[in-house]
Image (cartoon, rainbow, N blue to C red; front, side, top):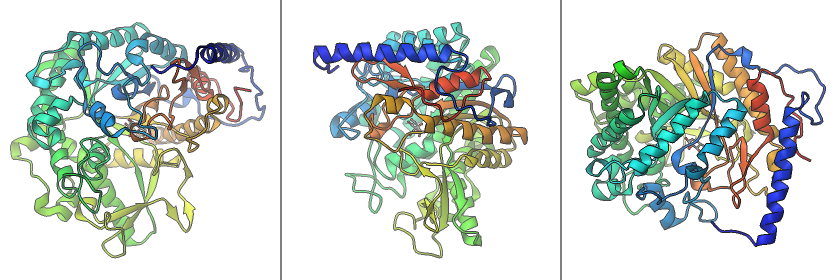
Amino acid sequence: MKLQSKSTTIFLFWYLIYIYASVLEASNDSDGGFELEKKEEHHVKISDFPTGFFFGAATSAYQVEGAYLEDAKSLSNWDTFCHSIGCGENGENGDIADFHYHLFLKDIEIMHSLGLKAYRFSISWARILPRGKCGEVNPAGIMFYNKIIDNLILKGIEPFVTIHHFDFPQELEDKYESWLNHEMQEDFVHLADICFKYFGDRVKYWTTFNEPNLFTDFAYMWGVYPPARCSKPFGNCRTGNSDVDPLIVMHNIVLAHGKTAKLYYQKYKLEQGGSIGIVVNCLMFVPLTNSKLDVEATQRAFAFYIGRVLDPLIYGDYPQEMHEYLGNQLPNFSIHEKYILKNSIDFIGINHYSSIYTKDCTNSTCSPTANRAIQGFLDIVAMRDGILIGESTGIEDFYVVPKGIEEIVNEIKFRYKNKPMFITENGYSSPDLHEKRVNVILNDTKRVKFHQEYLEFLAKSIRDGADVRGYFVWSLMDNYEWLSGYSVKFGLYYVDRETQTRIPKLSAIWYKNFLLNKTYPINVRAYA
Ligand code: BGC
């Protein structure tokens, strides 16, 4: 780790300890010790949610673990990608990230002190099976996740484990082009088998994949995630076919899920009693106008983006709209595969951040990338009549639209007959990416407001009958945000990159109070 000069480091260290101590002291006071705004406002409370509802926070392996080559871990696709092109503004990567591989016990302490009931994290495939199914299981990798799981349970925190959150051993890419090859299905099932075998006695909530819809598009259509494959007009990659590859990749992922679920149901479920789901990136699509064409384009957007993953796993095939628009380009499932896929999830993981307007392209002018079958001949836009759909955030295409969470939950509830749902990610990042003043970052009133408002709308959907069983803040702490490196921050905790000290932001204090069923005014400043 790059360290500053000794005296600056010592100063910074004591400064951070001072801030940390004052916040802890303040958060223990009955009024929080801050300048509370004494205005009576209604705020969502934990008592607005059903008993047993899981409130938690989430992270993923590459984004927090670091230790990228320790204890026999192999290089992952993301290690290789970021080392070659340099991800993030300053060529950053996840080599060190939040050093969670070494600080996980402290992080579990933090979760406990917040009162979290659940923690969602992912497994680094390259740590457990450095060479995929052709190599040995790495005992150090197994031990690491065993320690995490045991310590979570000791603190009464339910582990929610994602098996694949974008990263896998680079060797699988080099050997047979990973997800473009059906061999990857067997490799994935082997990984899942190892996870169930070693962790399944204690892990009761499994998700196979995180956001296969976002992952396939970013990696194989736009070519911005590894293995960076695409073709024009989507991008200028060395190789790839943006109109075809995403369909092949999704087909392999969906089948890998189906086979994994079958394995779990046949070999493990009876004894272990857990459940299995998948996590989908769920933008809420809103018609740009109320014309019939835009309304139909909005339905197509759901089918092409969300239904593409969920329809096969619940109904056994891709949505009818995809068949209609893609014809023979869409890979087929055999009767046997459809049988395996149908009803292969116990719950749906919803990652929801934003809503976006949808516009038809069959009858109006659109960008060359939108006006294509692979995109369902539709475009997404953020403005209507010159007004943004919601306040901007640190991520392009993510806007603050609190009502969207109620709308997306209701749509999913309707389409999938109220299958149990978890909000597996929801979070806010400030658009001010260059803000360096720690006290400003810590006073994250906008993040508090974001969570309060989204939770209010979530509570409403639950009151109206939606079977939502949990909510995970993305993220427990600031971490490595893929192409944005460390400048985009989603955490409840600020992480000092030099010392790896975790400091609670105002949002962490709010979450802690919320979990204690205490209201906490939005406009409170925690830090001078
Ligand atoms: C991903 C996370 C990511 C978050 C914020 C989700 O798409 O699952 O890994 O950090 O969004 O961009």
